[in-house]
Amino acid sequence: MKRILLLLTFLTGVHLQANVEKGKAVYAANCAICHTVNGGRALGPDFNIVSYTRKKAEIAQYVKDPYSMYKKFGYSANAMPTLPLEDSEIKDVADYISSLQPFKKWMIKKKH
Ligand code: HEC
Image (cartoon, rainbow, N blue to C red; front, top):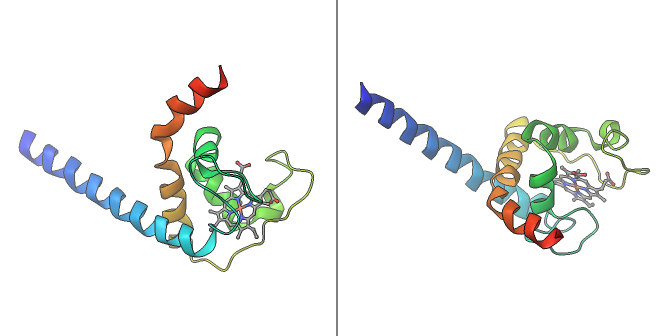
């Protein structure tokens, strides 16, 4: 039983990793011109900070329809376009952004 559980944990981990890899490719092709990773400056907010402040589902919602979300996210205007992505690509890119969380601690330290 324990072995089966271990195997399941392993398979789930591999599956998530695959989504993150796919999401990284979606990011490179569709988001990198406006969003940095690891604290750079661009038109949109850096994704390490987004991974710290937003839940995965919120990120996916924003990408799916930025126009209906920008006020809720505290913006006074919407400059991000609605991108022609498949739902699976949106999910993958949200997985990728959320996977950037190991930098959270570093970001919290920097604030103090
Ligand atoms: C043309 C530039 C542009 C592109 C391309 C773009 N974004 Fe954005 N994004 C923005 C801007 C600017 C904002 C700030 C709010 C707004 O204008 O809608 C933003 C905001 C966001 C937010 C909300 C951030 C927050 O927490 O406040 C998320 C999530 C996001 N973008 C994800 C993505 C993802 C994922 C992609 C690629 C699939 C992407 N964006 C592509 C410009 C862009």
